[in-house]
Image 1 (tube, rainbow, N blue to C red):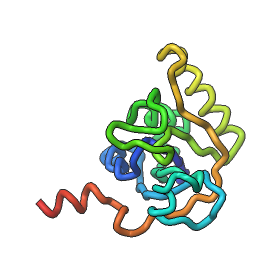
Image 2: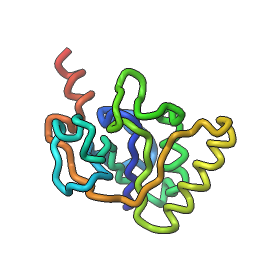
Image 3: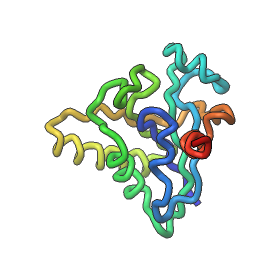
Length: 150
């Protein structure tokens, strides 16, 4: 099993990964800031450097890292800067977090392809994973919980 971490806007969008072959699990979290332990309130303040991310565990026998990066670009609008739809703020920026040089190279290759297709408008950052921490329990599977109420 392998891990892919990406910011596609609000981490409640983890539901976008549901039902996709090779995806084993998802988790809402924060990544990219200086503090190894942050809260939703702190991240929403915009000064921690963290963004809301979805940590995806996937089966590399079914999906490659490159396929995960391509899926990441399909699941959100990578041309929006510090926002995704109605969610606005630095914590909603488009960003891929890698752990190995191979992952970095693959992410950069796909980003360059996407940028070419989108006339240089892609705002996605590619960064070394830094200080990932799991979001609070009430954020996990939020969309599923919300739909169960109705």
